Length: 94
Image (cartoon, rainbow, N blue to C red; front, side, top):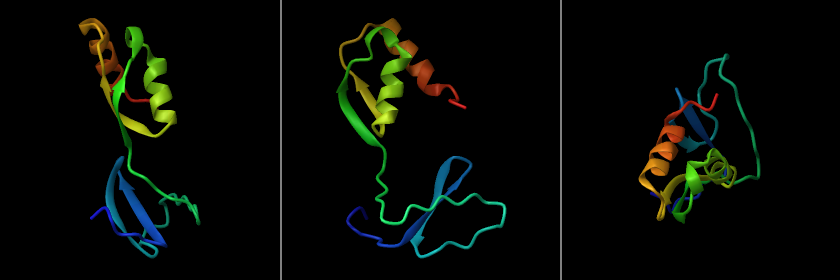
């Protein structure tokens, strides 16, 4: 896994979690929203192994997400700020 190219595939997300990945068009209910992006590449969330979320600011996490980073390692930050960042990460963005 991880080295297979699927030229024309699908990803099914159920309750916010990837439940199926495959080639072709998936069987789906009529009430399921479809996002079609032919010619685009889908990547997993990236990991930033060295970032600074200064003062636990939400901007740091928002900026990471804008660049496709879904996992961070906050380097050299005060404990209270790490706690802030963890709480921010656990909140529902909607």
